[in-house]
Length: 76
Image 1 (cartoon, rainbow, N blue to C red):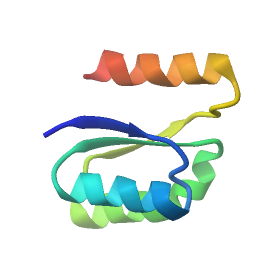
Image 2 (spheres, one colour; image 1 turned 180 degrees about the horizontal axis):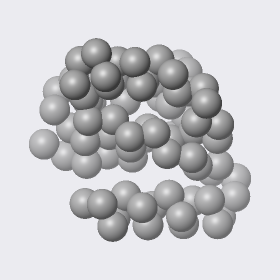
Image 3 (cartoon, helix red, strand yellow; image 1 turned 135 degrees about the vertical axis):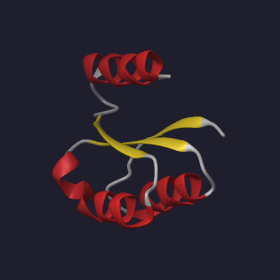
Image 4 (cartoon, rainbow, N blue to C red; image 1 turned 45 degrees about the vertical axis):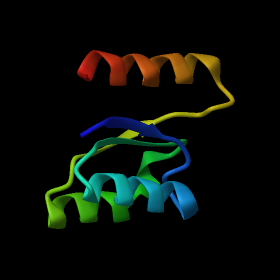
């Protein structure tokens, strides 16, 4: 199983990718600018016992990217 960091997980393909990877057993760091928009992922995590962690990340902000990547690396 892999550890994956996926951007744009508050909706669309990012959310679908996060769910797909988690359901196949990967540990998923589901990132988004506003983690309050991650309620559906949190619900799926809790209901299905998935390994999903919401992570605040704005890909246009270098400090945000470095902080998020460091958190994933340190957790692995």
